[in-house]
Every structure is written in C-alpha cells, then in structure tokens.
Length: 179
Picture 1 (cartoon, rainbow, N blue to C red):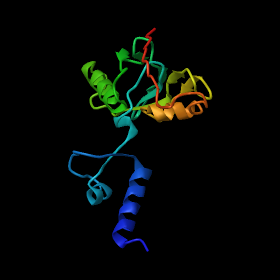
Picture 2 (picture 1 turned 90 degrees about the horizontal axis):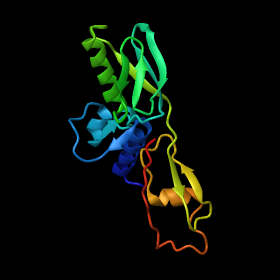
Picture 3 (picture 1 turned 60 degrees about the horizontal axis):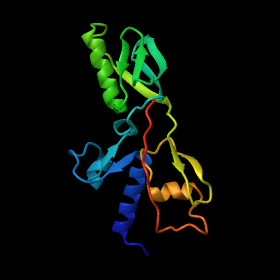
C-alpha cells in the first residue's frame, strides 16, 4: 500500500503537469492554490517560447476587430501590422512581444490602454540533420511544442544507432545558416 503523503504528492504533480510547464528552483511567491501547496511555479508556454522567423502569428487587440491580423514573421524578424507598420518581434517571448506591441500602440497614440493578444498559428519548422551510423539518417523535425531536444532524443528519432555504429563515439557538429 502507498503511503497517503506520497499519493497526495503524486496527485499534485499530475495536476501541475496537466495545467502547464513546471519550473523548479527559485520562484516568485505562489499565486495559485496548487503553486502554494507544492512550492512550484506553473509557467505558460507564452512565457517561454521565443518567436522566430517563419512563425505564423495572429495578433488582435481586444474590442478592435479592424486591427486583427495573421502574419508570418519575415526574414528580418519583423511583422507588418495594421496601423503600426513593421515591428521587430523575433527573439521575444509571446508575452514580451504582446507588451512591445502594446507600447507601440500607446507611443503612436492609437490606443490608450490596448489589450494585445498574440497566438502562434503555425510554428516555423525546426530541423536537425542527423548523419552517420543511425537507422534513418536525414532530417529530423522538432516536435512543435518542444523548445529543445537532447542528443539522445535526436538519435532516438533517427531510429537509434545502427548495428555497426558506436554509441559511445557520438560527435556533435553545430552549423547555423541564416538566410
């Protein structure tokens, strides 16, 4: 039989995992009953995901349907939006991009206190090339919701090390190409 305390902890962890991403370590004061009970902070994806070139986003301002737009972030990291023009948002989290657009609307004296909302309609594809002695060499695509992948996850996605490959002799080479 499982001790009562462990069952309660397991239930708390399951609740946390079903409501958001859990961040361990130093956290601000708890703001929800779940956070208070566990000492963990729940973080929404918008606080972590950084917008990138080729992300397709939807931007809206509450109560202002004429400002709603769906745009792809261009190669310069900018989006062209109604009323405010071109704004650089690449590299910002969704939350910070919302705040940046909010400030821009206020600076241009378009709105007094806009409630800006950004949602990612379509994530830019993230690819990794895996070459060498793996079962399925070639491009591996990151799952959309993942912010990072370990080397073990990448090799597993490529079908694992082939029967003649050396699992203990993996070499990682990083090359970035910006167009």
